[in-house]
Length: 130
Image (cartoon, rainbow, N blue to C red; front, side, top):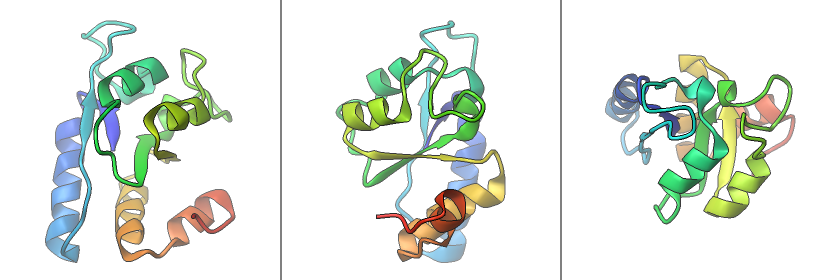
């Protein structure tokens, strides 16, 4: 899960609670520093693709990287620096899934991914995830 610095501790708590309730959950939270707008900007809604790629390149991100939908321009798959989700996927070598800013959506994404049940992705994209 890539997120702004301010939300990272809270998201770690959600991941830890999901681990407690559901057993073995493979999920990491990556707080992304905002080099583009400045380090005092700590929210995920102002993250750029170049910051996410620069800080996560070379890390073992598993099969899927979750990002908040608020990183994207409304109705698009483009971040504020004009980098697309597909550009990021190519640069990082991992599938990137924008999720709604909703705790239940995050928990669903983590749990369904681990159980290999794609109900969340089917609801989000209208098709079964690979």
